[in-house]
Length: 401
Ligand code: ARG
Image 1 (cartoon, rainbow, N blue to C red):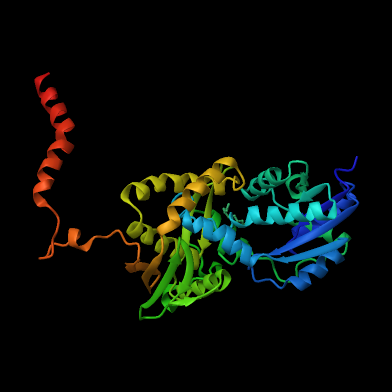
Image 2 (image 1 turned 120 degrees about the vertical axis):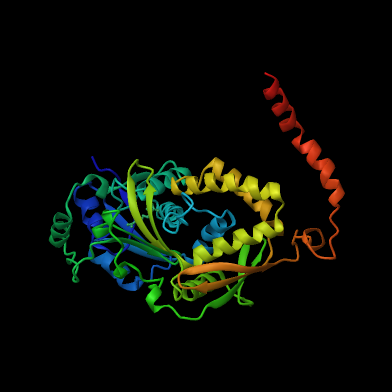
């Protein structure tokens, strides 16, 4: 029995997704495979990728430039939520999956496919993100994941591909598993599998080694409107340009490298290396601007929301009722988060050194220790009496008993 008739396959042009094409047709009886390559700013030429799909037996090969949507509707939402999984990973890979899932579902509906497919293996988070996002968007579609089932080694996969005219990779394949998009790079495997081993310089591309960074600091100003990044050094730019520019500026100072042990949804720990210069700077700047423009209670309450939000995104629940509800909360909080943050970039560090906003809640005449002080010092006494009253009563009672 064929698993499906017509399938839309998420396609990168690499050996594994290429092998999925003949595999789906020959092993699983699929009649027609349509590939879809999404441009999320990974920097690959997509025209050759389009051709490769036909060579591997695809009946149609779609290419979509999704960079703008990716940054505007996924990354900028996550920045408003200051999303950092386990406080460290800005979700650069994770954010791309729900978008690719959406493009797959749209293509499946347009071309009348009864299934979508991806080349994820059974060990990572990405399979979960695809499968769950697809189920959320169109529960009637089947999801096929051949690489999760075929059990072929790397060599066997290449050999299988060669039988169907898929050329073996020309350059010696890298020992690392790398995922890349405009937001950053995720690097795992190879020598990195030993958590004690320092990542070799060769794994980094976006953030310069400290030895090669300028000896002078550089200042950069990021402007936000309602929590959305809009300007770099005073110049308005579209989302893709903004992220591209900040990647270059922060990257040349070595900003945005992350080396962490991470808890995957599938229950295993993995050692992950990331670089995400622009995203790290944007979250840092955005968070600082919130500290200036949001009340104390919102700022503090939002931290918990942010943590839940990050877990949902990491765990594949981008399209889910709780995520929608959190989005509404985050959106509401951003109304007055407008202004400019000034950062100093130097030797691998981005440090916020200034912030300003027309909506600033900073009351200089209240905060100052100088002549202009308007704060009613006497009022503090009564406040502290009431504030400390429960503690005083508790202490007295403890002494008695
Ligand atoms: N651990 C990260 C995540 O789950 C990155 C996975 C990236 N995939 C890769 N082939 N390196 O979001």
